[in-house]
Length: 433
Ligand SMILES: [Zn+2]
Image (cartoon, rainbow, N blue to C red; front, side, top):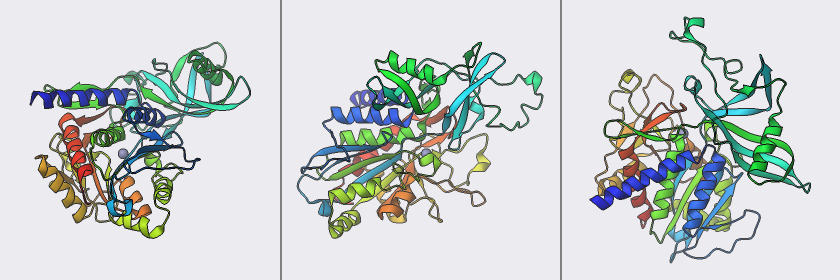
């Protein structure tokens, strides 16, 4: 019992450090790559010829922001073993810095920002923000290069307007993304040079830079993840949607002792529709399977013997807004992972795949909940139905229940994530799916 508790504490600690170290999908993938490296996974390059071995552990990344890690079956052929797959997404809604971002107003240095995905904008005000992402530059020998950057320190803030200057502030003020959001980075006598700032940042981390060209940079909250609640039953952090699922899948895969085919796929660009070379609607996974099984009949046999759990957080019922849920389908935090169901296939769950999940959960007495959106409301979606339609694999959509989805500070239950990892472990151990 004590050993179990220690293990869970450790998992939580690792999760919080993963969340804190992953301000962008690039950083999340970097974190995952180093964890998998430590566990003996070999990094493959899509440009090379691959020589894969039975029982081998491999990973491949695309755009530095999507990753697939997998193990080949030890004894059986892939067409006979199939893949037990877990999928998630690496990106979260956020504010992106525009290509020509400098704004100089009243002596303040501000940045123009673009909204990435469905951001809940109000919580971004009055936060101690930092900047992270990838920067492309010409190095000191004239070569085009790129590197990840993270300012770490709080370097920007989006100040609220005082209530005295806007008496309507508490009765539903609309937020104009173009004019309300440019964060303040400091004071300057003349128009500052953002690329010059990036050049210095890169040089401070030992890079030799002649000129910064382009970048994909986001703002993020510097407040670290925390355990909250009288019994520390809640976890608060940015990017729980969906780094929580990436982490759970990674933990399960690292723990798995399976000798069959197992896969974790974490794609970028889910929050903007998944349509990209690295996104779930792109060909990354399909092209991987084409390389593993070039012969179509074998590949299709493998897919017919495979199943995917698409993990993305679910909406927990909010006690102040309980009318937003169907009364019979309002998941409670820490009452178990949620099976997401939608008759219109916004979720890929079928009765067969959800039953499979229930059977696995029951092995460890993990409770399971269901989410169906109210019939008078539209339903969100995720990578499950997209991957399922792209590669034709049986799929189940599940997720840990959370509050404040797409806020800069989201909340989930600590017990749910421990329990979900347990079910994932069972799933990866399945001899046949
Ligand atoms: Zn999500």
